[in-house]
Amino acid sequence: MKTAPRPGVIVGVLALAGILAALTQTLVVPLIGELPRMLDTSASNASWVVTATLLSAAVATPVAGRLGDMYGKRRMLLLSLVPLIAGSVVCALSSSLAPMVAGRALQGMGMGVVPLGVSLMRDVVPAERLGSAIAVMSASMGVGGALGLPFSAGIAENASWRTLFWVVAALSLVVAALVRAVVPAGRGGAVSARFDGLGALGLGTALICLLLAVSKGADWGWGSGTTLGLFAATVLILPLWGWWELRIQDPLVDLRVTAGPTVLMTNAASILVGFAMYAQSLVVPQLLQLPEATGYGLGQSMLAAGLWMAPGGLMMMALSPLGAKLSAARGPKVTLAVGSLVIAAGYGASLPLMGSTLGLLVVTILCSTGVGLAYGAMPALIMGAVPQSETASANSFNTLMRSIGTSVSAAVIGVVLANMTTPLGGHALPSESGFRMAMLIGCAMGLVASAVAIAIPVRKAAAREPEPSAPAVSAGQ
Image (cartoon, rainbow, N blue to C red; front, side, top):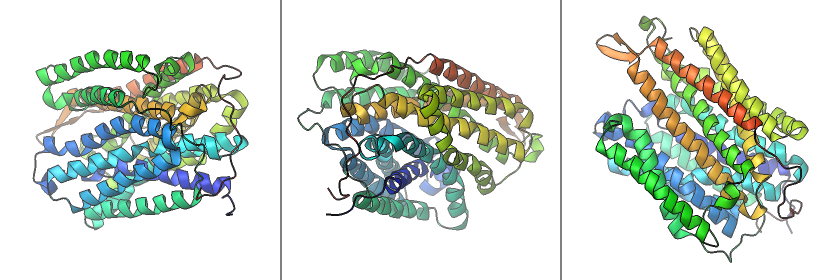
């Protein structure tokens, strides 16, 4: 019989999977300006390379979570890596828009890796180390995002863009092998339950309508028939989906659990934190890269901008144990509230500091630190309020809420910057006042998220299924 791997090794492998997922999301950022030329298409059509990943991730994440609860979280984690590998290969071989969009959609289907990994920790990590393990796993998303920009920019500037996707495909294979070899299977799934196919179809359709309207509304026109029709379809489909989920015995998302005050308010705070997190991700790179002739741009290259932003993501990982200790001492709701306040402080500090690279480095470190604290607290709150048999489903739904927050943030900040511009060389560029307004919006979202977090009710003893200690099973079981 094989000796069970140490918890630290398990956490390290799962965190590596989270870093890979986050890296995949930022992979094409340095290529956005070149995509129309690379794929022989228009800039508007090229934006589908980003949108496809967003849509497929939104649909696949709750489905992967539910299947993880039913058939085993490690099994679904491994299966989630399959489309990530396949999508990377398809993108690497693409020379036109359609296969590139298809490949990016496949990559998006692998985004369930993070909530599945967090949920699996509940099964395979000893209770006394669970808090720190969740914090590290949550911070891995920040590390992947922070490293993704300079990694992608460095390869794109010095080698073929196809190399990016080949590297991700190879890394995905390595991660899959490590998960298979090191991570225990964990708690058995509820295979007697039926998968809610109609619920998955309904939620997927509603999410596609909502996120398409939010992400493409600026291109199509917010008052266009297409955009308004998608919003109307969302409003029509979601209540019908909710009625169906409450009616059946084995729903995709247990709305009775989700509607509980702890889970409901944690998800609300997650939307706000997702919004706040993404706002600075949109503003800071532009400030770093805009020409100095604007009077406020800092004239950095894409690679240099990524390197200036990278310490923020690394700080998330470095401070994750601090968040775990705070949650153990005062409860995860306090950590979520503190993290949201730190995000707000980072945005507030940006107003006097946005004129220098060092100032923006401080801003990104503050905001990333707050995001790391908040993201580490959310799964702890969720898992403390749901039965162990619904851990993956509930965490996946929470991840979906954060994704909705980032999508809305992209739309709102995009509208602000598009409508507050200054002319330069015959082009309209976002103005300094537009960037300041975006930062103020991010600050406000952080403050509101903190207020919501403070109001989260937490039971002293959660009424859930007994949780056995982490099983000492072999990695191959």
